[in-house]
Image 1 (cartoon, rainbow, N blue to C red):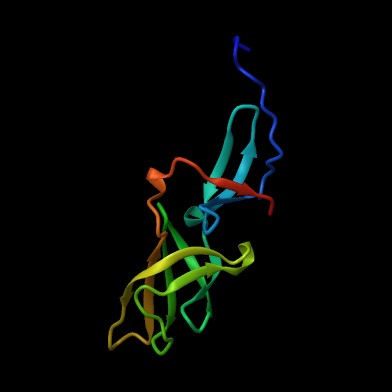
Image 2 (image 1 turned 30 degrees about the vertical axis):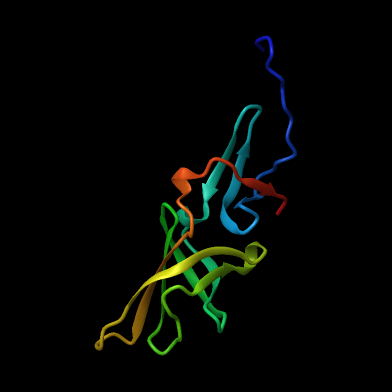
Length: 131
């Protein structure tokens, strides 16, 4: 250890939640080391349960990486651009906002694309909360 360095011990543990501005869920802690903590973005996971829109429609979102997600719902489900998407299994934190809704006459389903309301590549600080 060099002069001036402190060995800082944290209470972080795998599974803890990584949140921005006490509102937006970004990821989960994977590993905790002496000098770094590895985090997996929620958008890098295969799927996550979400609540979509003002009617809190329960759905499974598929992570597309970099803060982007996709949901497939029946065409009749009332979802609108700008609707909020929450993560109930992770404390109900905001996961994203609906950006694009893709529908075709031939398909009985619609594809909802949503993304994090913040640019994860510009975040300097996050909070870590016990899961």
